[in-house]
Image (cartoon, rainbow, N blue to C red):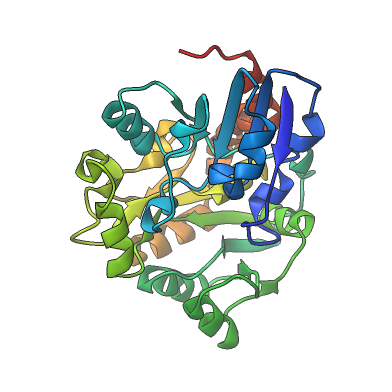
Length: 315
């Protein structure tokens, strides 16, 4: 299977840069896998591979693209699409009466799995600050020996403000440095949802055909909340760091992992603080969960994804 990447539209340093799928490129005259958001509607690549019998598109942004006015009908151009939102997969296949969309877990390269590290830090969060819930989370984490990791480019105003206040402990780490820091921490906090930023985002969502049939949008009008599985869960799992996951209206993480077996839920800020204290005081009691998540995440590598896509049959 031929692999073509175009990360023109991606923020430098984000996870897609480290998939290494292009390194698995094998000559083919009839099957190509394209990844990078710029491939969604790019005449250059569509023309280049127009005679291929099978054109596959990997999408790890869904459902965020529905917040934008850009086209998102990848099934018009590709024979199969692999993406991380199970709700959108079901919705798009149903409303378009097709079977082109397939659900995957957010992938990572096995080459990035870190060696065992001394657990120097208590708890961490990595990524952008997108709402009051993230600020409240940091206020809890700062009571402990915490890490907050972020970039200083491609970020929103809220993240920039928090960084200026000095809440970030690690800025602009390389991917290797970031993974090592995760492996040095006992607990990682994860929110598998995001907020629609404004009414324009909601309007763009509601412009989609039968948008209300997508379970991911069931709360978009009231709470402006949308589920999305975050790559940081697998980054923690592969680093043998315990995931504390915020319980929400969807709990999309349960598509791939089991609560109590692979991770621990928390329900609010007080519960988060209590769970952190409990884990730190009884860390040895959570090694089974940590090992279970580690062993399970190994099936979600990009190496396995490449093989699964290559060997899969079109319906």
